Length: 140
Image (cartoon, rainbow, N blue to C red):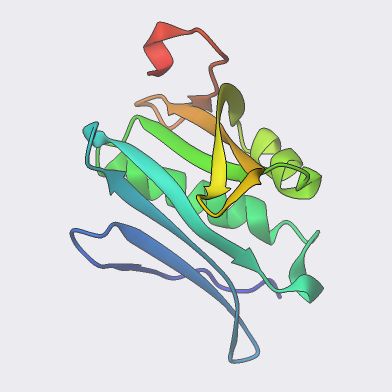
């Protein structure tokens, strides 16, 4: 049986999903509003899956549940940051409809050589979603 993915709301911080397996937490993700863009924009953060549960489809379920909860709350654009070299995470997000935006930033100020790149997913009101690539003004 796959892990259950309950959600708990912590306004105004956003929506958090935590997956449990045999009584233990095995994955989590949060979708938080972005202050600079208002309530229609959110950022996927704190994505973590226990190593033994990676590659099981749990990541797709968590991302899907977060984006759907955001859609219900009026979120239309979801962004996230993925560290350079984390190909598994980048592929996961691409499977979930995210596309690279071309924006980059250091992971931490004290590590300027280590960067991350932004990905974005547009959420359509009907529950369908699609990503938009670089330069698409509707995705901003």
